[in-house]
Image 1 (cartoon, one colour):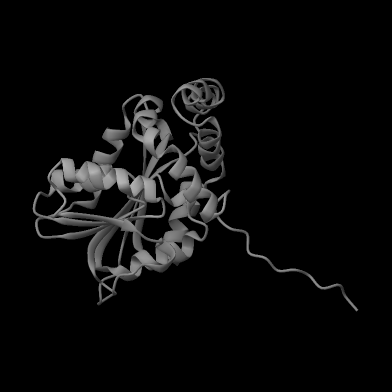
Image 2: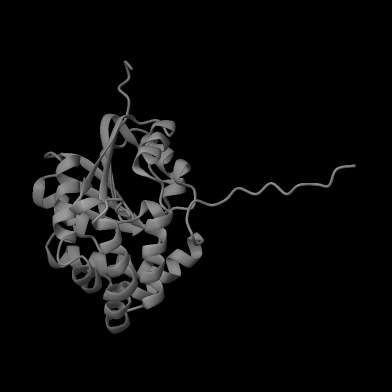
Length: 248
């Protein structure tokens, strides 16, 4: 009689959802400052490009998945002042900082940041005009399920934009990044916050699927017209997908 085989689905992320929540709660107070330094100030530019891809408009309703400290939600309101944003995140500490930041900007009536899980979104079908997530999707334990949920809550024709850190593949950028991740990043994070959290960051970048594979996953989850664009030599990548129209 053959031995029983244990069938266990490999989670997509390198750590569990609970480990991820605890990690971001721990570094929340240092998150913004550390990222500004590690990105050489480019993180704001990356977010602006991502929001521009979303093309937010007046009176639009947008979902920010993994909203963190609220920078993307605030950028949406900068580009579309009369829109509104619902942000969700698993880290209570990050959400607390985000709420203080949006309140300080006078945007508390337009931006709502709450605890939430992308694997089980508490919104009805076709509720949002678009959705966005930045530096988050690699931490999701079941990416296909999460992306499918986002597809469900965005109206037909709406866009989903993903901004994610990716490992460069070029002959110049790849070795430069490995030197940076192996030497400079640990030094900065030792001073600023948590070395282990940012070691996880570089490991999760290396583990993330290649862009051409990831857009196939977006298509499997229901999106059409999927595409991607590298920024800053491939250190970050913008992924875009569209919810099929009702006539498709």
